[in-house]
Image (tube, rainbow, N blue to C red; front, side, top):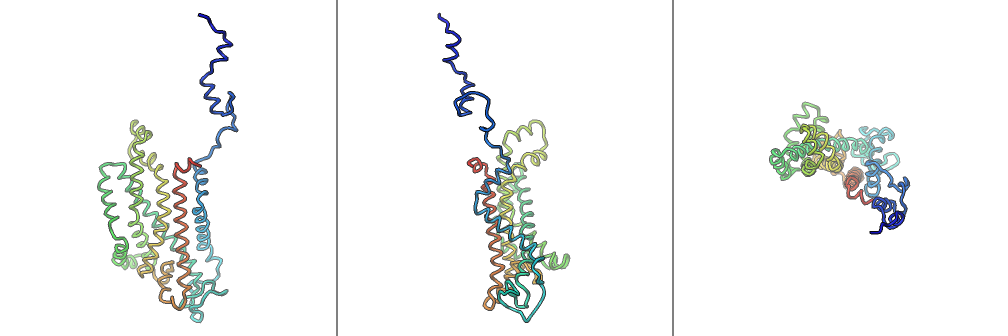
Length: 332
């Protein structure tokens, strides 16, 4: 048998590792990888923000919400008029240089009251959202992780989903508002009641979303590995499962703010919300409805503020949902 020389072997055979290197470099030449050819490293936060910026509605909503926040929290310090000062001689005026949004039936400046009321409405939305997210996340975690709790907790969730929420809210407010007003005062008592009631009736969607994610995550290899080394269930939930369900919870939280603002406005518009000296946007609408034919501006301004705030928060929630989706991020 004739042996081939070493030069012939080197010219006819190709090392598989060299082929893989050439294919990775894409330039037909073997050698060390050029750092310039490697993809740019991006952290998870930068990747999420990059995908969020591609959602035009979310970016516009973020800008509008930022303007609303600056207006309601800084505006009362810049705008000089007192929202509670009564001037009957200036009652039911339209927009003017003296009163940018007009006045109400007692001569109080509408713009000053809208700005102050925005603080309360946004505070109610955020606080009620925190209550709903906490309850929904806790129920979803327990239902998804502990099999024996799944049935009872999900039937409880279905029960709350089947209830007519608005009539239920009205009944609860009528039954407990006087007791809380006597114990905590007319303003703080109604605030606590409205926040707890809205939060306690808005956790169901979050619970179902979290439960579904927990059912999938607890079968992942890293969770099974933690079980195999004897990690306690409490640590598995807090260290491994809970951080991986924060993305859908964040989206649900952003949408929960919009729901809470709308619910509070509906309750106040029905006359079961805050008193007249606690001017939320919904309460301003309730006070202005009887003067619609005389001064439509009183209804227009709080309605616009509610609309743009809810729409902007909804767009932000849609953008966060897309940005936190790993499938969409992998495309960009």
